[in-house]
Image (cartoon, rainbow, N blue to C red):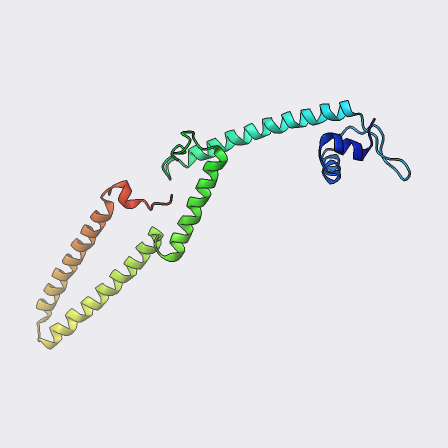
Length: 193
C-alpha cells in the first residue's frame, strides 16, 4: 500500500495530476480515503490496472474521433481538392493535420473576403443588379431628353426607346451567358494553400 505522494512518484506524475485523475474518475481505486490525521492509501496493482483500462478506452475513443474526422473530411471533398501527401516524408497527413489545413484555408478565405480579394457571389449579383437598374433608368432619361432637344416625334422616341431596350436585353443575356460558361477550375478557385 502506498500513500498519495508515493503513488504519484511511482506513476511519475505530479500530486495535482493524481488529484485531477481522482476527481475525473470517481471510480479511481482508493483502498483508504484520507481524513484529518490519516493519508490516502492505494493498492498499486489496482491503480495500474485501472489506468491501463482508461488508457485503452481513451485509445478507442481517439480512434473513433479519427474516424469521425475522416468522415467529416470526406464531406468537404467537393469544396476543396484533397490534400497532397507530405512532400518530405511521402506519408499522408493525419486527420488532425488535415483538419488544421481546413481551418487554415477557412481563415485565408475569410481574410480574402475581408480584404476584398474574394467576394460573395450574391453580393456581386446584387451590386450588378442595382448598377444595371440605375444605368437603365439614366439611359432612358437621357434618350427622352435628347429626343426632346432634337424635337423627335413620339413615334420616333418610342422606336429609339424600344431599340435601346432590345439592346439592353441582349447585353444582359450575353453577360449571363458569360457567367454560365464553365471556366477552368484553376481560374475560378482561389489558391488557399
